[in-house]
Amino acid sequence: MSGPARNWIDYATFVDLERDSVAKHEWFDGQIYAMAGGTFEHGALAANVIAKLAALGASLEVDRVFEGVELSEATRPAVG
Figure 1 (tube, helix red, strand yellow):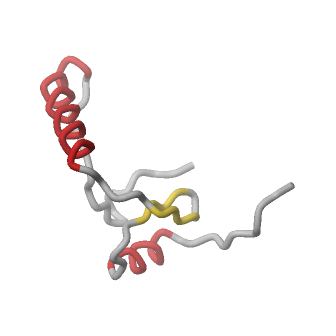
Figure 2 (figure 1 turned 45 degrees about the horizontal axis):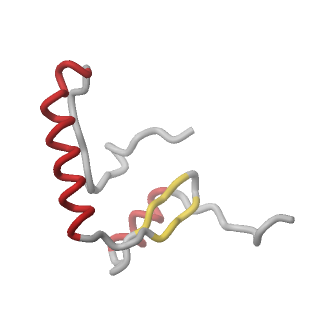
């Protein structure tokens, strides 16, 4: 049994919709998914993980660590 048919949304349309949205969403492979709101505990945990990753960056051969960034068409990662 399959679920209801979903419409594919291009990334530029998603960015336009998200810009005016109070709730935040994630775009993946043409589909939009609602994101849960963050908590204080989640924010603290994320900050600690980012600090540890940034400190290990050189030894892990990682040049950047991100959390909660907004991506433009030019900076979004390739999907697929």
